[in-house]
Image (cartoon, rainbow, N blue to C red; front, top):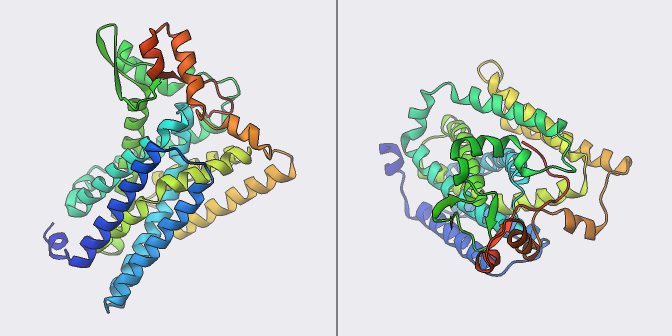
Length: 357
C-alpha cells in the first residue's frame, strides 16, 4: 500500500481520470441513444488509440522505462481481457440477455472491475493469494462450462431448463423473476413483494467471474512489475475497451457457427492451465497464440463447410434480444401482468443458438 501511494503522480492521475470520464460519458450516451452494431468496431479502435496515446505520454515524460512498463501492462491486460470475453459470451447467452441491457451490464461490470483492480494493487491481492484454492475452483468451473458449451443442443433451449437458472431458483426461490426490465431495473415489486430480475442475476454472475479472473491477471502484473499506480492505470485503460471488444467478438460468434466449439476449447484450455498452474505456467502471449490459432481454424472450417451465416437479416434475428418491443408484448401476455407492468417488463426471448450453462 505504501509503495502504491508513493507512486502517485500527476500524469498517472490525469490518464486515469481522463479515460474514466470518457468511458462513462460514452456509455451514458450509448444507453440514452442505441447505436448500430458496426460502431462497436470504431469504438474499439478508439480505445486502442487511447492506449497508445497514454503510453506515448509516459514516453514523452522522458522516462522510457515507465513507457515500456505502461505499454507492457496495457497489452498484458488486453490479452487477459480476451479470456474474459469468452466467459462473458457464454454467461450472457445462457441468460438470454436482451440487447438493450447488455451494454448497461457490461458498463457496470467494467466499473466494478476497475474498483477490483484498485483494491488489488493497494494490497488486497496478497491477502487473496493466501486462498490457494481459488485457481482450482475457477479452473474446474471453466472446464465444466466449456464441456457443457460443446455438448449443449441449444436450438430449442429454454432458460428455465438451464443449470444457471436452476441454481439461482434454488437459492432465491420465488424471489427470482425470469424477466428483464426494459427500464433497467434490478428489482421489481410483484404481488406486494420485491423480486430480483434476471438483469440483477446476470450482473451478479459476471461480477463474480470477473473478480476471480482479475485476481489472476493482477497477480501476474504485480509479479512482473510492481504495485505502482502506473500499472493500475494501464489495467484500467485496457478494461475500458472490453465492452466493445465483446460486441466485436459477438458478431464473429454469430456469423461463424463452428466458433462455438472453438469457445469450448478455449474455456477448457484456460481451465486446465489454472488447474496445473503450479507445474505449467506458460507466458500470456503463448496462451493468446493458442486462442488465435483455434479461433482462426474455427472460422476457416465454418467457411469451408458452409456453416457461415452471411444473411444479415438472420444474424439480426439471432442476436439476443435486439427487438425489445417484441419482448415487452410477450411479457404482458404470458406473465399475465397488468398494462402498466407490461410496458416496462420483458420476458426472456425464445431466440435460437443459445449456449446452455
